[in-house]
Image (cartoon, rainbow, N blue to C red):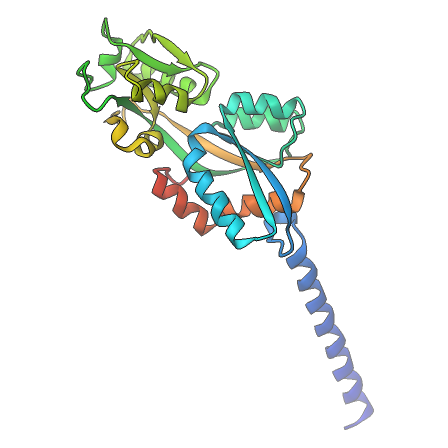
Length: 262
């Protein structure tokens, strides 16, 4: 083998080694949503109340795949969570039930961007016996029908107002609740005749409530964005959790809970 051939083979070997090194660096870097193999510690996730069941499942699955990590979940109204984040509450990930609330966080420089991972629509929840005989949106405006809604600044409340506007109705609730789970509880405890909640919440409640579908022409939807927060105390864990929500496993859990794809 001549000297020129040996030199060429040596150059090829160096190039291959360099490429392997580049691949290793890229695989270990969290930027761009890549998985991190050595994540550990706690990931604090602020998530919309309507994500309670699905994110509890996702967190358990994520922890099982990454024994060194623990997910701490904080559920609430997206509007309230966004306010807490912009005021400096320590968190790694924000999953909102409204693009509007995520925009508030991004505008405050608390996150640099987000990705939409799910969509949800509304449904009427009534007690199993449906004592008020509610059959559709129009019945919510009837005199004597006690209705629970979310507060107007909360995504489920704002989305409900879109439904009423489409139907040309004015609904006067007997209570305005801080989040969708609180509104649903009013039905489960027979304190109201109906509540406007998400289809996912009706599914999660099982036999405790009965769902009355809202026709597509009247219904309204809301998108769910997720973001790693700029001041995340565990940025690698945050990137990995966001990736997991966006993965095929995440989509399966969300679909089983009744969420639609974005």
